[in-house]
Image (cartoon, rainbow, N blue to C red; front, side, top):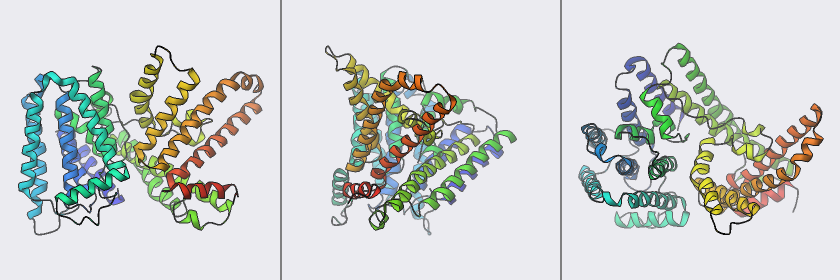
Length: 476
C-alpha cells in the first residue's frame, strides 16, 4: 500500500467514526472492505485479472461461509440481502468500464459485463449444487480446505504459477511468450486463505461460532488487515464487530492516532530509509568486505522488522477507529534471549495459527502411534516441518525452504540445549551480573542467528545466499 492509499483508508474509518457513529457499522465496514480489495489489487499482465481475482476472493469467501453456516442460516432473508448487496457492489464496480475516464477503483478497465454475469450465474449454480450435497458436509469441508491449499500452491510454486499463467493466456488468446511466474499476484490471498481455513477447521471440530454472511465476509476481508494481517480469530473478531470494544471518544482517538502515526514512521521513514542499503540481490554481489556485508545484513534485519511491524501498527490503529482491537503481531522480538521466545513474539498470529492447526495436531498424531517416535526425534520432525511450512507461506522456493530449515533446526537445537543446560545455568547465574551476562548473550546470539537466516529471505537464489554467508566470515 502507498501512503496515499493508507491515508484514504484512514479517512474512511474516521468518516464512520465521527459522522456515521454506530449507524450501519457492519455494512459500512463490509462495503468499504469490498471496494478496497478491488482498489488495492495491482494491475496484472493477464487481461482483466486485476478484477477477476478480487471477484474470486468474494466467491470463495461466500462459498466458505455457506458450507460452515447452519442449515437454517443459509436461507435467512438477512443473508440473502447481504448476498444481493455484494453482487450489486461488484456489478457497479464492473459498470465503471462504461465511464469516459480511467477507472478510479480498479487497476484497469473492468472486463465485459456479460462475462461477469455468466460467472456469477455459474457461481450461483455451484452454490445450488452444494446445497444438494448437504449429507456430504464433512467431505465438503475437507474438499474446501484442500482446494484452498491447491490454489495457494498454484500461485506460490514458481513452476505451477508459470503453467497457470500459460493456461490462462492460452484460453484468453494472450501472448504465450510473455507468461511469467509473477502474472498472478493475488493481493491478500495468503491471509484470506488462512482465515478461511481457520473457520473450516473450527467448523469440523464443532467450535465455530454462528455468524451471518455479512459478519463472515467482514472478518475475512476486513480492509485494515487485508494486505498484511494480523490473522485474527473469528470468535475474538466477532465480539468487537458486534459490540465495539471502546467508543470512539477523544481518548480512543488519541490511542488510535498514536499507533497509526507510529506505523507510518516505522514504515515510510525508518524502513524505507534502511531499504536503501539493506541486503538485496544487487548489492550482495557488489560488496567487497565482510564488514560492509554485515552492515547490509543488519540493515535488512531492521528494515523487515520496521516494515512489517509498521504495517501492523497502521492496521491496528485504523481498526481501532472502527471499534475493533486487532491482536498484536510483534512484541520486541529482537530483544528476546532465545529463538523460542523470538518466535513467540514475531508475527505472533501466524505462529499461533500454525501452532493450532499444524504443530499441535501433528504432535498429538505422532504421540498416538502404537510405537511413537523418541521424544527428541518427534520434536525435530514437528519443529522443522512447521518452520518449513511457514517458509512456504511466504513463497515455495529453495531459499524459503532453507530459511524454514534454518529456523526449524535452530528451534530443535535450542530445545535440546535448554534441556541440557537448564540446571547448570540456574546454578551458575546466582548473581545479578551473571544473570545479565546470560540474558545479554542470549539476546545477541538469538539476534545474529535470526539475522543470518534473513539471508535466505532477502535473496532469491541459493548460490547468492551461499556467497553472502562466505563473505560474512571472510571465507573465499
